[in-house]
Amino acid sequence: MSIPHDGLSDDEIKKILEEYKIIAVVGMSKDPLKPGHYVPKFLIKHGYKVIPVNPTVDEVLGLKSYPSLIDVPEDVEVVDVFRRPEYTPEVAEEAVKKKAKVLWLQEGIYNPQAVQIAKLGGLTVVWNRCMMKEHNRLIGSKPYTTLRKL
Image (cartoon, rainbow, N blue to C red; front, side):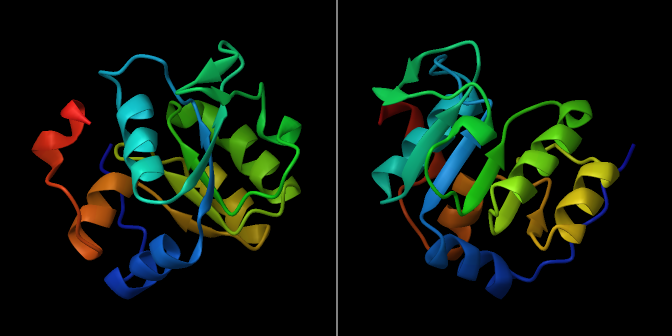
C-alpha cells in the first residue's frame, strides 16, 4: 500500500515543531535501538517536554510512563505515535478526548480511519513523517548519524 502525502507544507510542519512543546509519545520504548526511544530522546535534548505512554513500562529515560493517553494528568499538545497502523484509531480517539492539537503518526504509519477521527476532532494530522528528521530538516540540529551516540 502506498501512503498518500499528508498535504502539509514545510511551513506548517515547522510551525508545529516551533509552537508545540509538550509531546506525549505513544509507544515509547526502552530499547535504545528503536526509533520509539531515540526520537523522543532527541526531542528532549531539543527542549521538548516528553511524556511516555506505554502500558508495558513504568518509566523510560527516567520519565514516568502512563498506560494510555487518557491517564496522562496534564495537557498534551502533540501526540507522537510509534504504534502499528491498526492501533492508531484508538490513539486518535484518545488524542481528541485529551484536546491535543496535533496527531503525529511517525514514518511508515498511516491509517485513514485514525486521520479522519483526529481531523473531525479538530486536530492537525501529520503522517508518515519522523519528528526528528523533520526537526533536522526544517529547524536544524545535529546530523541524524550522530543521534545514537547522544
